[in-house]
Image (cartoon, rainbow, N blue to C red):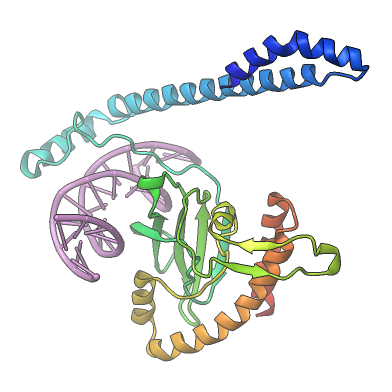
Length: 281
DNA sequence: GTTATTTGACCTGG
DNA sequence: CCAGGTCAAATAAC
């Protein structure tokens, strides 16, 4: 389509150019043409980049399946495969990819929080210097929408219970959000031209994983809490009452300010804001 | 029957 | 080599 646009521009160039000259005004066509060429250039670069990264992953995969396994290990694997029909080197699982991105968001919380997205647990692990299991979650829309958001939940303290949730990547899915139709009034008269609507499309672009509400633990997280606490029922109801009220107010304010900043600034602002909530609260 | 969780094996970066 | 991240079969939940 960009190519077609370029052809159309080239075709009409002479005519428009003459018209503009007659009117004595400056033509914007050269600028537009450059723009289209830049777009085409970006497409080309992107495709090159994608192709080259595919090559890299294929190469790495081939290398890993053929050379990184020592002869000694191969022997032991083959031995167990005789009895249990586990994977051999040839039918060993493919596409294994280890996370290499830096965390995009980290949050400590006295309770397990519901961030509005639907997560699927894919593993848990006991880590070296931790007393509790670390749970691994990925977005439930990984397969149907290709969303690569992930999070880890690690309990870091028993009494009072404290959890560290670390987020990796960003949601690209269209998750169903709770309270997805909140319309906020402007902060000040100077900001009165900005109407903020927190509909579902906005939330999809949010980098902050705490977009609207809140604080109702997921099924799995609830089970963990009930296992952990003697008076789980009382704790749940009182915490939910308290935090639903406080955090709705606080997070609304946070979002109103953050929405008037650029996306990078807004993430930074919300990080600072949520930290200050921790400090105060 | 479909979807989510559990859990032991597998894989890899450091 | 190994700690930590991921896979996928078995199992549970719905």
